[in-house]
Image 1 (cartoon, rainbow, N blue to C red):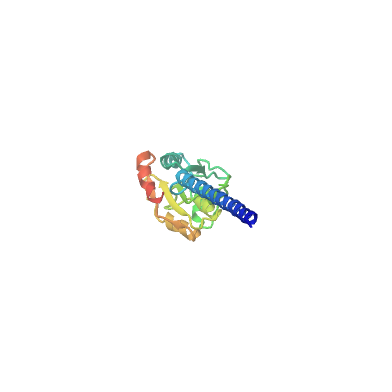
Image 2: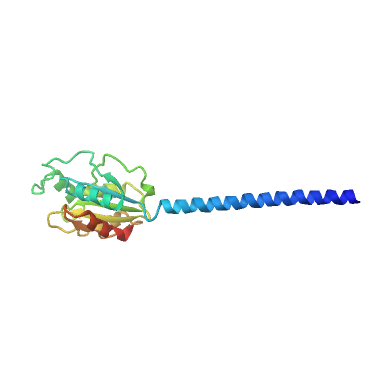
Length: 203
């Protein structure tokens, strides 16, 4: 009987050792997971942003680059498949390429490159010059090329005197599942600090 009793004690001890080992392993796993999650939280705080822009004369490009710098966003230039010439941009000529495009609300000029990882961005700042009181047709091409569902889209523009107008409303119509804001027109000489303060509302 004593032998059997000792055997039972040893069996219980081995079982307890296994239980303690399992509990220890589980505890280590939880600690590692919490540590990893904490690291991930530190690695990314706020929304991921992209600054996409079309610039015909360089003014919008200057603002876009400063905005990307201000908010530490990725930068993408919307390049037309067929570059615009000086004659194309002559708004006084009703037969110029830009004039013809802007008269036709269904015009969609082709774009040269594509954002391959659009899915990872939460906020897309879209920059452009004001043409005929609104966003250039190539911006509509850009918006329609992607699934922008649940993304925040914030237009920004440059112009000699015109405001951004209904550009935000126009973009909202062709991206109905996104949240599009009215946006703002900036001087090409706007400071990085001013752009940072403006953009913080969406980051």
